[in-house]
Amino acid sequence: MARPLVPPGPLADAGRRAAEHRAWYFYDWANSGFVTTTGAVLFGPYLTAIAETAACGQPGTPEEPCRGTLDVLGIPVAAGSVAPYAVTFATLLSAGLLPIVGAIADRTSRKRHMLAGFAWAGAASAASMFLVAGSNWVLGIVLMFAASLFLGASLVVNDAILCEIAAESERDQVSSRGWALGYLGGGLLLAANLVLVTVLPFGLSRADAVRASLLAAGIWWGLWTLVPFRGLRDRPPVAAVATGPQQGLLGAAFGQLRQTLRHARSYPQTLRFLIAYLFYNDGIQTVIYAASIYGSRQLGLAESTLIAAILVVQFVAFAGALLLGRVAGRAGSKRTILAALILWTLVVSAAFFLPVRQVVPFLVLACAIGIVLGGSQALSRSLFSLLIPRGKEGEYFSLYQAAERGTSWFGTLAFGLVFQLTGSYRNAILVLIMFFVVGFVLLSRVDVERGIEKAGNEVPAVLRT
Image (cartoon, rainbow, N blue to C red):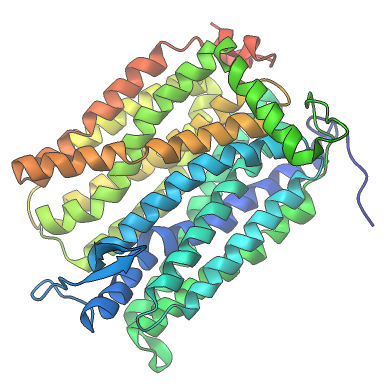
């Protein structure tokens, strides 16, 4: 039996509203297990080994790298480049599809069903990575594409739900707690999987241990999605464009999206924030990507140290997201993000001076990254939610996700070009300061109060000048 719809906006009863918040937190917990274990740590190297086996008969080593190529749609591609190229194309493809997902989400009263449907499809794809073995790199790419697309679609819907369940004054806290729980869940599953991969119990080979970890990440994602699916409530759409008799849901969604894009210029503060976010978030994502390369190639650190640093970042980011959420409750999210960007600049500057083969300074820097990582991302999500016109949450969050995915290669491109030109990862890491400085300048020029009022939302007291 279907649940009855509740009125638009947060539930009036404080206890029921808090319960719905807790249910929403657990989607960050659910998908972060996949993002951390599969996306950030295990699947890229594993898929590379599978591709090298297909091209060279066995995975390459630093002493004897695989120089073979694979035929990808008639194009010869180096086996070692298959995984990063696949991630890049999946990211760009999702950037084009997500705005349609957001437009549909704004027109439906079944957002929790959309969230769960995308999540379970992504979880099934992630769990099926267990089947990738031998030289079957094509299956690996297909499953990675599917999991990435479904993850992005689910995040659009999840972010839109935040605007339904939390009042404007609550969003910094709710978003920060969700992000913190995501880092905690992702860190716990990653720690368990790394023990499995490094200790190799039950007589497993390393490849089998990796496959078991990929399966566990998919199951984790799917099972924990039951919590938001059961705990969230359905609400009718707000301010959706009327559906014509011959139009259908998809046609109406396209019509609504076209209308939103035409009128986006009416919200200049929202667009300014989005541009600022693209710059500093690109810096954040590149630091995450480049940290292990910098640690291993420039600083000469062992794999065990890099694994320890990953876990340190995960668990410190849990506390950091909560800490910056509390700071935002007193200083406001914009000021807190600006302060975090200053800290990011100092962190990257300090990384330039790290000594070679010194473990402690590297782990200290990992702690500093963890403190600002979760909080800056969580507060960006909640601040953007205040700048979105009512009834357009799915569309604008789809633009938020799509723009992030469509431009997230700028930082890695700059990092790679500087290394190619100078031969030094120290110089390459230093260029990332530019992304945080530009993001800081652009964000400082956003009139948050005016943007919130223009969007028709209530300005939280802490943000009033």
